[in-house]
Amino acid sequence: MQLEKRLKEFVEQTEGIRGVIISTPEGLPFSYYSSGKFDADLIAAITSSIFALAKKSGRAADLGLPNEITIHMEDGSLYIFPLGSLVFGILTLPGAMTGMVLVNARKILGDLEKLEI
Image (cartoon, rainbow, N blue to C red; front, side, top):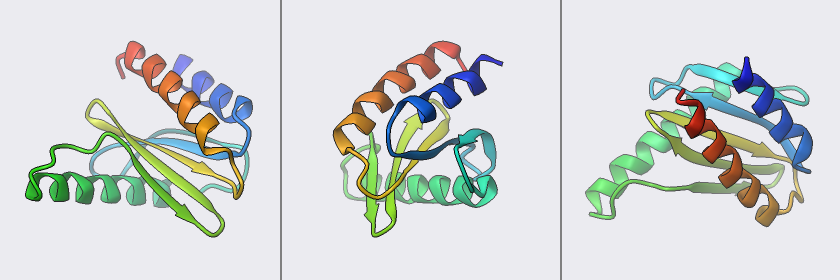
């Protein structure tokens, strides 16, 4: 399928990406690709939960819906984006170049929107 191929290309062509996931609002994995160890069920639940909390917080603070969520941790970063009714998550390794991750994230999000998933 074209979706899985595009996710694989994104991970393999963007330095420092550990894996990507598309999850449902309920926290279930819709599609994913990883270059290594990756618990899709856990990552789907985490990304969807964080996005849901950000949506709730944005509404409560009268800020609107989140466009992007970035969390930097000691062993990598997690980037979360809305993708229609789904949630798109990117896990990076420590030292990944944030600028390149975000530029390539915008490209793949555009590609995924065209696939009408």
